Image 1 (tube, rainbow, N blue to C red):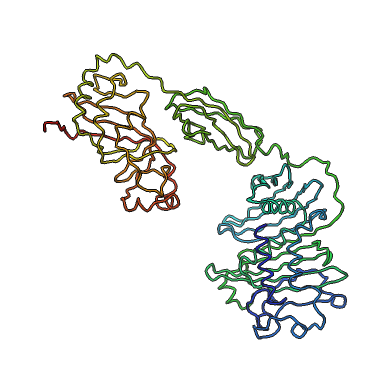
Image 2 (cartoon, rainbow, N blue to C red; image 1 turned 60 degrees about the horizontal axis):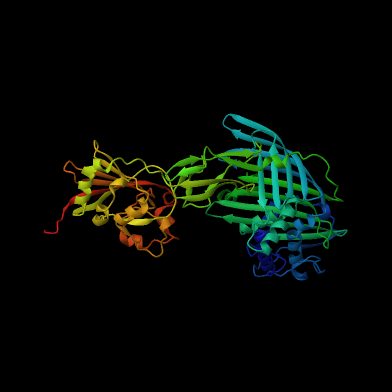
Amino acid sequence: MMKKKAFILSLLMLSSLGACNLSQGTSSQESLASLESLILEVSSDLSSDESSSESVLSTITSEDSSNTSCDSSSSGNTNQPFLTAEEAQMLVINAGSVDVGYAKTAEVTLNASGYDGGIRYDQTMYSQYTTYKDDITIGSGSVHHVVHDADGDVTYNDNFDEVNLIRNYYLIQAIVYENSVFESNTDRTNLFDGSDVGSISDNFQYAQELVSCGAGSKAFDDLYYATVLESTFYYSASQQNGKVALKFYAEAENSDSNQKYIATFTYEFDSKEHGFLQKYVSEQAFYRLDDYESADDLSTLVPLDYSLETNLITSGELDEFTDEFPIDIDSSFVQSITLSAAETTLEVGETLAIRAVVEPETAVNKSLIFSSTNENVAVVTNDSTGTILALGEGTCEIVALNVESGVEGRISITVTKKAKPDTGDDAAKADLKEALDESLYQVLTLVNYCSGAGEFSGTGVLIEKTGSLNSISLSTLSLSDFVYNSKTRVASYVGDDIQDRLARILPLIDNGNENLSNYYGFVNDKYVYYQSIEEFEIHLATDNTIDYIDVVVRNNAFEPTINADKFATLTDENIVDELGECPINKWGTVHIYVESQGFVYPDE
């Protein structure tokens, strides 16, 4: 409906040029005669009986292109026109809303031809529609589709049933074709999806026009499409026995696409006052512009695309609908989603696949989007499998939503601390104790990193890539918080306070950019962005000193090289353009390696 309002304004602005040429373009008598000869006569016989009708031809008859008036001297008619340009336009604009409540049946025929992917096709369609009370339209018809390929003509025939209705504040449109050539299609639009009362009102008005079996909305849309192509318009109007016939002729060309557009739109209304559309015919064609301009005989030109559509609409009292729908609308949409899992209590770091049962089985679109109500507790790592990752203590709900139907399912998940394993006897960790004592004087610097597998989303802080660990904090770690393997000489930290204690050891810094939120973390030549510490392993040398430390963190998984100057220009608004959309939301694990750079003792 927004585009309709804009079109109304544009037509009224064009009408200020007079009821003649609806937009300035070629207007000489010679050019006009050429244009008129291209119009295939598809209008009603209403305008053919000159003895019983008064007619105003809204074109420019003077060779002077500045003459845009339509008075008696230029039109050849001494009578004042019975229908102004503004009135003619408003009849078309309002045709859809007048259809509502009056259009009883409609009969539509369509002939079209053109090229689809370079392959020629021809199509004919016949359909009948009946409108019932409660905003329900039932339609049925047949489609004959011929595709011309290298092997000859391949013909498809299809019958279809169609239902359009407004139910529970949704506009539902469903089409089912008999053969597999055309896929079943069901659309559901929430009529309350608007930013204000005005836009929601437009939604309802437009929906009511669509469920009417009349052709009012289609008649307007075709004319609107011609304006989008920046067409030049001419129109004629005639009246007989109170009935009104309008014909619009439109032409446009685009040298960039090498196309010429020509169309005629013919409307028949029951009266000027009521404006009920009884017949609508549209004929539209696209030609190659260079072929069109060089043709000696335009009648021999074969268009790139061509369509001729006729709509016949009758009015009457609407009947109560008592028959069965040709389509079971309720079975086409998701009605319920039930979530379950092998368990609902996880430890931090564990993953879980959520099972979803979507009913009914006949629903056309059963796709789901999973989300967490608290991503500090658990996050969804894979939408297709419903896999979640436990991050922190607490309770959250995992939600599965079917967007088309608005139906959702929920399951509650509880996350507890990771159970601390048996760390063994501290007396057996003499090697580790010696290494931690010596680390007080050891220089341990971040040297490199590498990405691991997995995806994750969340927030985090930055580790300075060239920074050194806090040796004092490292040396005070408790032996009881490590599991030590004396054979591999590897000590794994398993303390409950891994985030708090180890965060004091790592060289954390601010990201240095006030315009960039932590959500857009990345790895560059100076910084490593991380969300949470997953593992902390100390590898000992043979002399019982720290050889290196392997820290595994959750991190944005892509690794662009970006210098500090470039980093300073990033904002939440431009980061997708600068770094690409796909990598921004991919997260995984990163190994950060810390190596010994030697020792510095106080007496040195």
